[in-house]
Image (cartoon, rainbow, N blue to C red; front, side, top):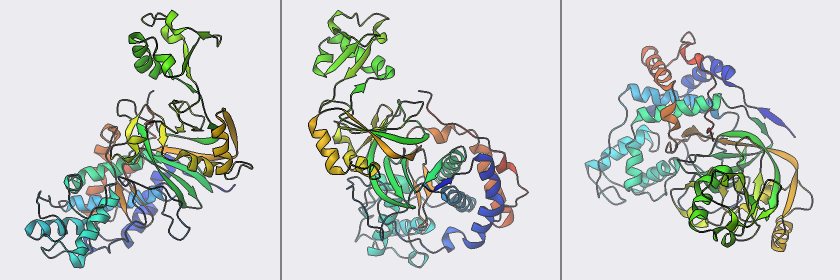
Length: 450
């Protein structure tokens, strides 16, 4: 299998001033002068997505590939220059911000969208909300993971009015996190972008599957990690993690000792022997010493499929019985693992190179109800990343909410951002390689302590 390695922090940051930044600035002028990029080929995180396998001709570009860091660096410089010039205007709330409307508010919207390259410069003038403007709004919505309505509703208005300073912070923090990441790319690999709440299966630099996912709640965040997919578990059992045992299961057992039986859970002692939950004092300090395991079945928290990947956080991708959250805009509902919509489809892709395990065989094995562990023929690299700002090969710059507050915790933002903005102001948007402040970054781990 062909592999490609993502460079570490020190090498990446040294490359940026001398090659990425200089080359980018020579070929890409400020936003207001640049041609508008083509619209994304597929929405990044639509409100009600449908998982399909794109044909090679229209397969979207991946969120994370070997060029992602370079593109984020270029986007960071462009947004820093925009910040130096005062940023974009605030779009006022108005009932006229719908197709067919008109007025000075629409003129402000045109200016705002032109400054972020969603609207071509030749269309910046005017007060009519025409089809061209509606298309620009949809492009903006796609870049921000919003439903592509073409109308400026409350969520779109809020995204439009995020200050450029915050967007600079998001890009800088995302770049810093990538610089600290050590990932071995492959011809086939998987990426979960936690803030965007989707997973991508990538083959030959194209996304062949994109699935909506549910990731960890803010109080139980999913970690960032790099590892390999090794096994697909069909009809898995679920051994309740200690954290969930303490926070969720034991409090319920204290109120109702019959909870375990109703949930098809077995209480096991240290030797693996069954224990009657009614004989356990769930208020004692010994209660966490028991193991609780949920049997396979429709009731199982992991559903019918688990995609396993060794990692120190004991997290994985899996099916779920709570499918109602997949159609919601807010998909941060898990306790740290990644719940995948249509996981059998993703499992079939994972097992494509494993003889005897097509989608038909997967469905047949699940129907039997017995636990089956399928080792993949070739381990697949997988990365769970935290990008609140990134750029794809089609020229689009994407943003998502900082759901876990990692951007705000980034200690180096205060130093990195003014350095780039000052250099842009002083040298006409050419960053000198002698400005070494940006090269002093150290690898930072944003792994959740859990």
